[in-house]
Length: 154
Image (cartoon, rainbow, N blue to C red; front, side, top):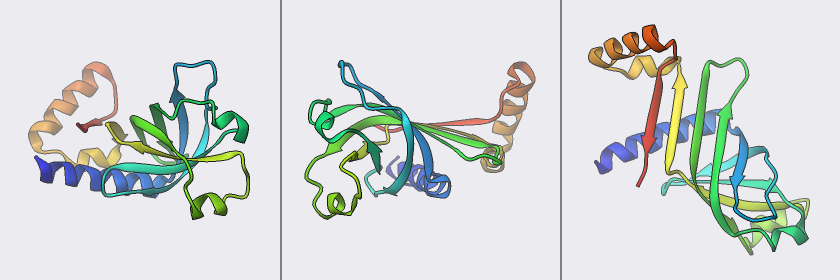
């Protein structure tokens, strides 16, 4: 099972680094919210964390929840693929040299643990066994949807 998670993480890391840009949405249960915005992925580490900056007013950042659930929707125009990642995100405070590199005090560094991912695209079909292809064909005939791969992390 551990090897399967490594393979899955490698697949997701490749797709994330390939697309790189995503729509960020935080699910925070407080009056103060982080804005939904477009982010650029810095890296995906070996533990399954996605690192990125998002915008937030410097004074406002101290009052926002430090941990929350979030979504990243990766999509690139012209490609027939989409990746939606969800998980627990946390604000990295005092990020040292990374904070010094930001040109604006309106950016905060986040890391998000991949807990679930959904990928849909034409290349999913290439990875399927013949039994899965038959199931996919019937599903598409009945539902008219594109092939989707779901990944769950514990």
